[in-house]
Image: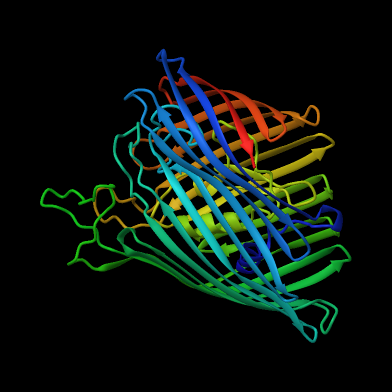
Amino acid sequence: MMRKTLIIALGTGLAVTPVAARERQITPYIEVAQVLTADLTNDDVLTYTTLAAGIDANVQTRRVQVQASYRYERRIGYDDRLADADIHSGLARAAVRVAAPLTIEGGALATRTRSDIRGAAPGVLQGNVANISQLYAIYAGPTFGSHIGPVGVSGGYRFGYTKVQAPSIVSPITGERRDVFDDSRSQQAQASLNLKSGTVLPVGITLSGAWVRDDASQLAQVYEGKYGRLDVLYPVLPTLALTAGVGYENIEISRRDALFDAAGQAVVNAQGRFQIDPNGQRRIDYNFDGLYYDAGVVWRPNQRTQLEVHAGERYGSFSAVGSFTYQASKTVAVRVSGYDGIQTFGRQLQTSLTEIPTAFNPGTNQLGQNFNGCVFGAQGGAAGNCLNSALQSVSTSAFRSRGVDAVISVTRGRTNFGLGAGYANRRYLASNAGPGIIIEGLEDESYYLQGYINHQLDTRTSIDANVFANYFLSGFGPQVGVYNIGATTTLNRRFGRFNAFGSVGIYNFGQDQQRSITSIQALLGGRYSF
């Protein structure tokens, strides 16, 4: 199972770049818009102005594949009820082939997300939204692949950094903070040897190993894992093979003691982050040292379709993972992925970012739902990936992450659309060190659905629509389910370098057995591209 996870993390997301699709385009812009938001439940209306500057870049050649979309926005309110805010949103993915066996990959993300699972949807810009944090993530590293005779040799290294600003408003449900994530540094190195079936032996053999480490500043938490694995692949048909593997792994997660005052309350700084007890000790939150195993099937009926499923025992219990990819044509791509692993927030986000293709649809939604949910692939490339499993909430504590994601991306003439859905479960792995620290065994769950469609009415006019629905259930504190649904539409009209646009959205946010809040939002603005 580890072998598949590591290969996916370091080697996927590259877009197909045929000769006809090579392009270079870099477009900086400035933008101004007026926004009106109305809380229909409480009869409250707010207006504010947004000033923005950004850049869209796309370079797709044989050796260089880069796409980046970044936007800085200043939100200016008209009274004390709405705080001014700076919002950064952007996504970048790159792969540069330095030489035939060596590629440098990287990615970056800036978005707003929940500081914990109990808040409203982070994409809604209305009002002073509680539990929302600004997040930044970046990673880069080399990958290589070559052959020594009949043996394939591959490997790679990745360094990543994740930073989350503390939320200014705490949860509307309990009024208290969870462990407020600060930043982390992640490293991952892996190497493998592969002998294809039918070359020397009738079976294929893969030997792989890896080392991973994640250092989080909150309570000096350290995640360190060492892995080794042997896989055997036995073809039973030209398109079907059986596979089995056994691995050894050593995972240890530890942290320093938190500082408590005389009343037994955790001591926190101005951002709500726990302070380290100078007289405390380092405690082990999770330790696994032993073997694991699984078996499964690999089905490849053609070059465009692949299904791989594995099931066995890992972390002392049943575990199953799998993936399905289908590239029906240059205009249709499907991806389904099931996962199971011991994770930290920084590691999971970095892995999710690597699985976004280097050619993606940046979206045209002006109401703020970009890059905090599903990201869909561009025409001729991979289907895309959903970031929801990582961004469902921010937590310093490590957890076992299990779930499934499904994404489809389609282009038909002047129309392109995408659909993403998934389920994510986190079971936390932290010892009970006092009030305010997540307790081992508690679970968070989330279900999510997102769709979009864009249609080019003519050479200068386009219209799009976006919908989303989420349901979150937190095991921390009261068992309260939080749901939010919404829909937006935007009309764009281009006049040379100037683009005029108007958007409208409707949202509903609520909690189980509580009164929900319905709001609408309208936006009118213009963009000048250089």
